[in-house]
Structure formats: structure tokens, C-alpha cells
Amino acid sequence: MEVKAVIFDLDNTLFDCMPSEIAAFGAAKKVMLELGLDPKLVPKIDSLYKTTPFLGIVNEMKDAVPENILDAGYKTYSSAGVGDDIKPFPDVVETLKGLKVIKILVTYGDEKIQWEKINKLGLAGFFDEIYVFNSLESGKTKKDVFAHMLEKLKLEPEEVVVVGDQLFSEIRHGNDLGMHTVQMLHGRHSKSKP
Image (tube, rainbow, N blue to C red):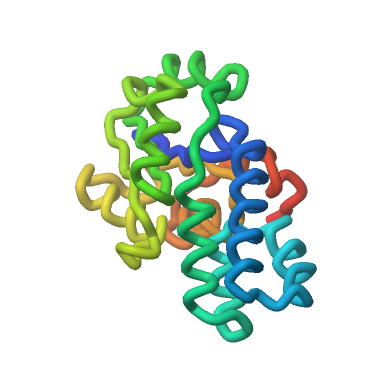
């Protein structure tokens, strides 16, 4: 079947977000420690951070860390500013220009911050649909959004390719729905293997 649409993730798929993520992670840990996070848990959190987004760390640590501490850490992490020097990975703009299919951007996090990234990168005009959501507030996953896009655009799963960096998020969710997937090996997920 012919590919009619490509869904792209944003962070570490279209640009390198690691410098700002590392700074945000440090700020979140500092806030959590100030609120009483047991320092003995820091090595586990650091280890999780190597392969897990901050929201995953929150979910993983919810039985060991008080909710108010995790909430403050997540709020600090997700509200960290975006650097002025961000730019798309090489060939991203040319690739987006050259694709003659429906292009969809799906990203989650603090909506204001995600839109700031999209605008600073100058990518908004390349997409037919942009879906930015906060998974903690909405309770939605990328799988929910992908399924919504299939329905809204009247597409079959095999007509869609999902491009992302996270095996447990966009790659898994695309595969679960029967879509084709392409994993970008950037950032902290660069060594992840399916």
C-alpha cells in the first residue's frame, strides 16, 4: 500500500534537544532534593534518565517518592526554557520540503515550551497537522493521538510511517497500530535497539 502520511516526533527526531534536557533534568533534581528527595534515590533516577523521559521517571518512582516532590520535579523539568541556538538536524528541512505526503508533527510536553521549540526551529509551515499535548494533563499517549489522526484523516495504518527516537513511545505505539516505523538514533535513545 502507498504511504500517504508521515508522523514525526519533535525532540531528538528533528533537532537535538539534549543540551536543554540535561539542564532541565539538573534543575528538576535540585528542586526535588530541596523538597526532601532521599539522596539515595538519585543514582536510580540518574540511571533511569539515560533511557527514560522524565514523565517515565515520574511513573517509575511514584511508589518511592512523594507525589508533591515528583510533581515539582516534573513541573520544573517541563517548564525549562528553550535555548536560542536550537536548529534542526542537517537535512531535516530539505526532507520535509521533499516529502509529497501528509506531514504530521506529534509532540508532548509543556505546550508553551513545545510550541516555542517549533517556532524557533521554523518548522511549523512544513506540517499539515501539528498536535502538541501534555500527557500528564490530558491522560493521552502518542498511541491515542496516532489513532485519532488515522480516523481524522481517514487513513489506514499501513499508509502511515511514524518517525521518532523513543522505542517505548512513538515506535511502539506506531507498531501497535500497524504503522510503519523508523527510529532515529539521536540523543539518549541512540543506543536503544528494538
